Image (cartoon, rainbow, N blue to C red; front, side, top):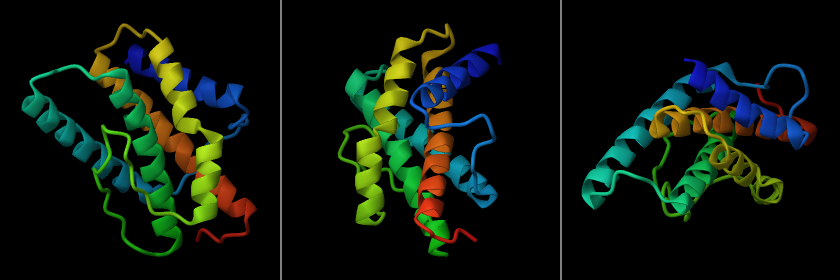
Length: 165
């Protein structure tokens, strides 16, 4: 449990260092909690199958970087679909190869690329050493990357005048 808290702090502190977060709570959409759970269960399963197929139990730094981009893209999609009152089903395309299609408007997509939250979160994770099981530590970092990405997208859309509810 302590390791999970330590990893969460690493990701949250990286967001704070880059002025992505204030001191208040994260902007979240409670209805997306089930989507978060669904996404991460599918990611675990996809990763398990991929590791069995390849015979290699470890991830490369490129695959880890792709995972951080992947959860950020999926958070943006989930928020966008919520705003558009459309159901969201997470696609696993690009999860490990960095070729991540994601479906948001061009302005939001460009803004996210400029922001580089996945690169910041991924670097913070790779620079940390929690001593925890590497896969569990990675998924804890990815969970917080998803939540902070959701927060960033919500705040960006609200600043653009998009009604979320």
